[in-house]
Image (tube, rainbow, N blue to C red):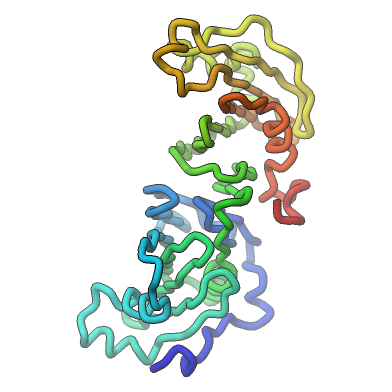
Length: 325
């Protein structure tokens, strides 16, 4: 069956527009999709070139998203996607599932095909993301009818591939921000109550971390002690700053400081930025401490940090939620 002959995937009626508990934005390594709010991440692997993200509901894995960069420049994307969606299956299984193959209309991921396996009770969806030149593979375990319709609309048809040369959205649990253009994923820790994402910049890095609930964290120690503790992780390379400066941002008041690279490190670590800027903010509205660490050689990062704070928390309806960066 040719792609032009494939019937489109049924997205459901008006009831499928919004899942019962509302939507949750998930944006990771350039991919951006919406899932039911009761879906949460349980597994993160790899980087922007090749990786995997797993989402669970009620303790059970429900949606797995995999991506892999396609290095060949000249390819037949339709043939590639069709071959990959049946990869790992025997000829008999492929012939059995071929009548269930459906096309998915997606502006960013094209072609995109989907096959529902009624025996295994899961749906596989695979497409080619032209902006980042990646194959994107989604495997969804069926649930309620409303969940199935919501995932088809938000995760399959609504999956977006963000331009890697422009600022990209990041969102996981309640941590969301817009990273600078050209930033690439390095590492992350996604624990309940303490989450951080580290991105590599050209000749620098960015760390965004949120600790919550803030009331409990501040009962353990005051904001100044939290600042000292977070900076201490870099004491082998950077000299501890003196007094902290007061800081006022859209998300609340806090402290800021600049840590200088130690003199004895400058010759051996010539690629290391000479200065790190640290911000620690008490966001009373969302009941969390927001930590931002940024360093970039020969560049004042303070304007970029203020812009990041202004555009953070976009997934919860912040100022940046209405328009792309």
